[in-house]
Image (tube, rainbow, N blue to C red):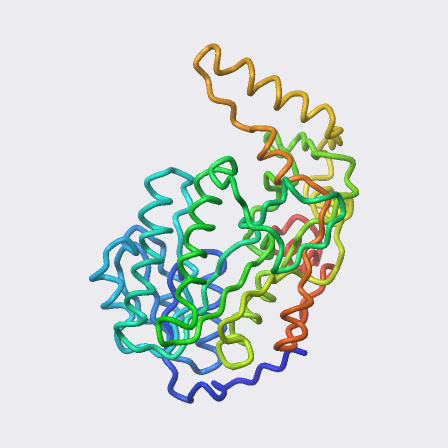
Length: 344
């Protein structure tokens, strides 16, 4: 059960927290929660990042690059807890290597050098080898991790490699580490329709991949923030890996009906059978390279993103008592209100 007070808990009343990736969708909300709870917060952000929201919170801003070791050491120095949510998001090989992999290596080394109290690393459910799972499999933290990461793309591959660096450091670097694997984040300000759902054209036509019955691995951004804060203060989480996915089983059809169709009532929605999509992806893989074009979507990536599975969050519920504080109906309403497309 989530029980967050308005002051820092056992980790210390003057706890200082460094948040990497603090200008991002998750990082900004985490910084806001920590400040409101009385923690001192330092944010490591790139120089080109928008920091106006963080500055309003009176967060200490540290400009720098995760790939620069000296910058990371300077940012970590003097803090008690590090929440490493930063990663390369462009999807390029260079950004994935420097920001995600080298950046994580730099964070781990800096945490050891500066003798921090705890590291919470934000990984992703993309590290699992979904393509090899059976239909309707319940995915726990012990499930097979991706063995062919580059077939999923540079982002997924780098997140897996970065997580491997973190788990290898557990029990070895002298400070406790927690790894969180969130599902698909949603909430006010998020991308409403992502590639996991399908494809869209100018928000006038929505192509939903599959028959709409598959369950989405959704987790509200505030619920992820809850899990981070609880892992910071709860020693039972130390040196553990947790899936973080909401308890509500939300299908694609439910998401379309309760969010997308209300936001875009005049749009056309088409459910595209997976058999047809797989045929298109297979044909593109075989034919496009013949004319020098690399296909955008491969069969492997399609199967990895669309297979009917369900991620289990039972471990984090049992170990530290985390639950989805914001349920889907509440989260959907908040998302709709944020877009100002419906009456609240």
